[in-house]
Length: 418
Figure 1 (cartoon, rainbow, N blue to C red):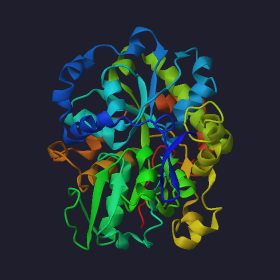
Figure 2 (figure 1 turned 120 degrees about the vertical axis):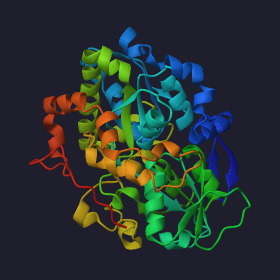
Figure 3 (figure 1 turned 60 degrees about the horizontal axis):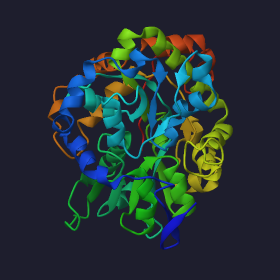
């Protein structure tokens, strides 16, 4: 890996290893604040036109370099799309959430993964006809703290600076739940503005920049998807404070999304896509180490990280004594989940809970659209259950997942416990 500046022992990767488009910062802020309508008004107005999927049948994937994209990358890398009779271009690595949303809105991509709150915001704040087709994975994120801190609990995040990847993210929701439970107030304040002892200041930072920012002491902690927690541990001396999957049992994080036009105009194509995605999740759940290497730069190169880091991000969990001793994992024996898991079914109970929690979560920008947004309506309207259910019936291997209740596999009760 080529490198640039050294920050206290952490060697900051260059832009070829972790590409970050700094010119997108303004666009990201506009997306988060709801200004996307004016920025992309012409494009969004054209979203009602057929997507690429309806025109030439080529699968065009956009993804961020995180393990949340595993199902899409494995479906391509293992040839599952091809086996379904589909042509699929090599997935396109995108540098942040706002440009991925842009690419989707502009019909550059017809198959993407989004943080689950993002399609809620897209559909109900910006009137973008996006459909949530399946979960991309469960768990797979964590909160790490810098070695320059003595933080061992959420209570100690008062007066600290914490980075999140996007306002409308599961990371922001779970973090703020934990802060509230710990008596700490989440706030968004400008740099240099004083913090009260019980205030935790939040800011958006692209995942590739988080480890270096932590090593340079620009932030005290960050919460993000893997493998950037594993990278922080290995490269920046970060300590895992808590895994998000140990706070919200088997929570969704990223979800698989498509254009609504594809689901209505080309149902056969959509079903084949979902068949490949479900097969990929089943395969990934049973072969995590192999899949980690496949995705890494030592394999197919979908993720610009070495296999050592990606493997840690996908496999190192309750076999690590330090995680149990420090309290990074508290529910291992009872919950039986992993650092990241793969279960495609989009449980309606989780969608309802997300909408409820979004109303409690501090974000930048206008949140008027959330007021009066009925959680049950979102579960019924945003999510298309038909194609993933048919795929799960065709490939019943998902029933082997310990999180699935074989007596009632399509329903569950949400469990949150700090």
